[in-house]
Amino acid sequence: MDFFDLLTMLGGLALFLYGMETMGDGLAKASGGKLERILEQLTSNTLRAVLLGAGVTAVIQSSSATTVMVVGFVNSGMMQLTQAVGIIMGANIGTTITSWILSLSGIESSHFFVRLLKPASFSPVMALIGVCFLMFSKKEKKRDAGLILIGFAILMTGMDTMSGSVKPLADVPEFTGLLTMFSNPVLGMLCGALLTAVIQSSSASVGILQALCATGAVSFGAAIPIIMGQNIGTCVTAVLSGIGAHKNAKRTALVHLYFNLMGTIIFMTIFYILNSFMQFEFMKQPVNAAGIAAVHTAFNVAATLVLFPFSKALVKLACLTIPESENKKADANMNAKDFQLLDMRFLDTPGYAVEQSRIVAVRMAELVKKALYCAVYLLDNFNEELTGKVMRLEKSVDKYEDELGSYLVKLSAKNLSEKDSHTVTMLLHCIGDFERISDHAVNIVETAKEMHQKKIHFSSKAREELKIFIRALTEIVDSAFAVFSEEDYERAAKIEPLEEAIDYLNQQLKKRHVERLRTGACTMELGFALADLTTNFERISDHCSNVAIALIQSRTDGYEAHEYTAKLHRENNPEFQKEYMAYRKKYILP
Figure 1 (cartoon, rainbow, N blue to C red):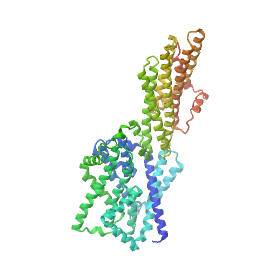
Figure 2: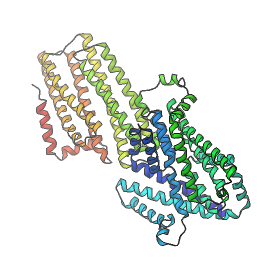
Figure 3: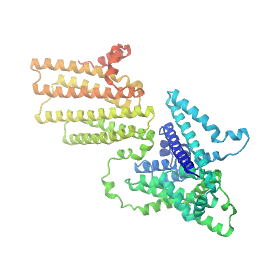
Figure 4: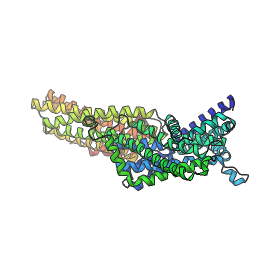
């Protein structure tokens, strides 16, 4: 093997790793967070959790991604530690699918249909289809499919390149001597663990080992301990993701480590004891890619079957390692549970992170609505306790905006689908409007407090008009917040006509108030209070309109509210005018 063969091998390795990453990204985008949501919801039964873990990992081609996601679930409180064990076991089985796919590169036959199964035959076709999807299709699903196909083609090309470049190593005595050294179970296991820990992917490290098999110099005796070590090395990703998490998330990472460590110890102990007595002949025989896939699968299935009955014992062991007292202080000072849903681990699966962000934004909206209605109630029923509640709610809303806004900015930097990208932009707009509505709620409270302290009251006529305004405000708030939480695009289109009617109502109310000032039926002091209230009401309706417009335009690239409203008026939309006039009649002043 000369210098240029080494360069070819490194190039093949780069293509292999990049192809695996590209294919994984495509699969993650195509799933759109749905697989993760299934994992979250359908894991009450441990056996079902194992099957789900295996299925999801087989689809997204990464046990590390599945395990890190589970650590995030447990950290956010959406999943119990006992539920996580089954998924972790299943993930180890699901990841073996990759090794079987890679083993197809070792197919040797002159038969036409058998040769078609060889990746070197069908990868170019997949690459061509993938490129066509990316270049000529505007549909997001087809583009994601194209990314998956191209990723797979690059992966298999890299595999073939590596396999071809390392074949000359069979004639290098130093290389064969190195592999003989790895026949030592401990050294082989440490080598496999180290390689996998560095590249943080057992699928990739198994693929590299399968490529080395093309030399014909890798025996079963050298491959088996390396495969065992690879299963331990893959735990590094989950352990790293547990750093800084709550105690149950750290325990989840430990369960993964203990499962693979115990499985390896049990397997190697029994296997090498039997080998010392029976002297397995196949240990000295060269292993091929399919053989490695078979060993990898046999180990993970056997480990799951042996340790499955002891899943609760694994949980107890993790709890003993990290006792209940740890992080007690941190738990006491923990932020609201909703913020745990914005786990940084979920950023690696952007589709799911977008869904989590929506959930938190909806809960933020609920707090805003509660603060606003408490503030309006205080106008006629002022009390200090409820005032304090509104202030606390407003501070919570500010915290939501800070946490969610920071998370969404980080999420926007990820490789998002077009739909998810629009959703993130929409959420960023909406949480700003929600926060402003909570500020207006505080303004309403301050007006109510001032009137209470000065013992001034609106006239009966002003109160009657204000009640009509509050009814209209209540309808637009209820509608806008329901539109946001339910993603009701049809109902969203009815928000803007109501907002225009509220603007008209505000103008009419101000005219009547000026008339009362002229006749002396109202004082200047009350006039300022009424003006403050109606201004806040009108601006709240503006923010409700912004929320609806952001939702409507999340289907497109545009997010300019003024353009949308201007378009409605320019086109003199008859449906819009009909809705607008209906609202004006509904909230007409007496």
